[in-house]
Length: 137
Image (cartoon, rainbow, N blue to C red; front, side, top):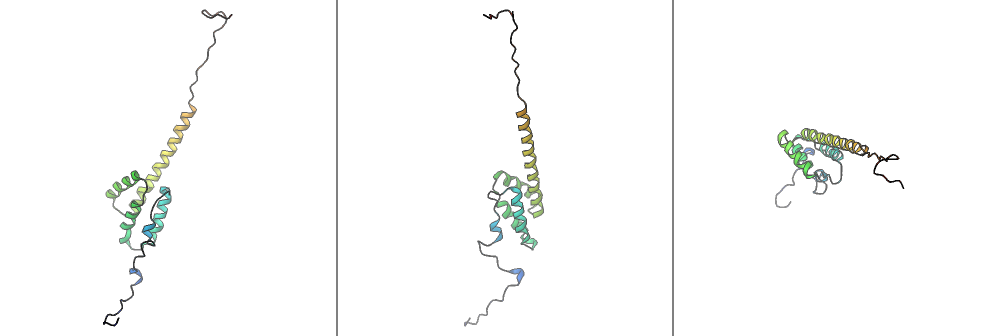
């Protein structure tokens, strides 16, 4: 710093620079093949690393962007637009979706069981001896 510039003061711990692109926790927020429940757990762990409230909407948006299922993504977006892009709203929406999926799976299994149990029975009736129109020879 020979031209009269002084070195920049170190940043306080709360204003630490954003980690590099590959290390940033929001970059790890992708569902891939995780279940919705496991993905929510991953999101909660990432959310816990951000102590400032102002980062909340960024985390919610990163979670939403990382969803794999387009239909779920669309439904979550519509509900977040109504309820606000806050972590609590996202948690509630995802928990509701998980509950719906469990209920659908349970209902579908019960219907399949009922369908399998309903077997059509066709009685076979043999004509008795001496019945008209039958030749027993």
